[in-house]
Image 1 (spheres, rainbow, N blue to C red):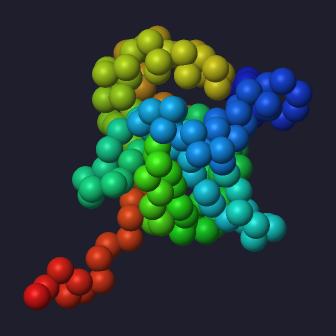
Image 2 (cartoon, rainbow, N blue to C red; image 1 turned 60 degrees about the vertical axis):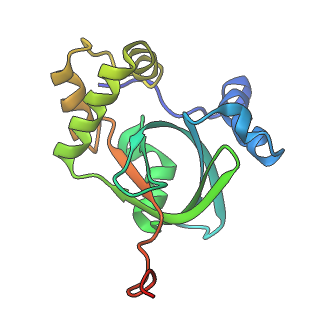
Length: 169
């Protein structure tokens, strides 16, 4: 069972929020293509909220990305996008409006295992940072990604589909 929780105060919170400041200062390109700034709506306040997340993969549609909720259903951003899935997101200098779609459990588990296979050290470090002590096997990552409540579910950030007839001459 995970013991760590989201950064609440002090230096820990400042370090977690530093990439948001970098994006606000126009320095998002310095963070590379592995981090995304997600802007979402608070489920109770209705106010814009921001979080920087690790990109764990690409979606099928151009401009779509997969992000992980390291704190599962406890993460505020995750709870917010479940309530209000219309979001905007930025990687580098490219900003998009779109939607946040939680992946089905099996797909989430499979994609998290793929991420761990391609980035084993980063995956291990991130899982330890959020309090998940796993053996590093693909099956362990699949179980973790498939558990939306206590695991690390994945969310697809995707531009809205083109309106019917948008590409027709």
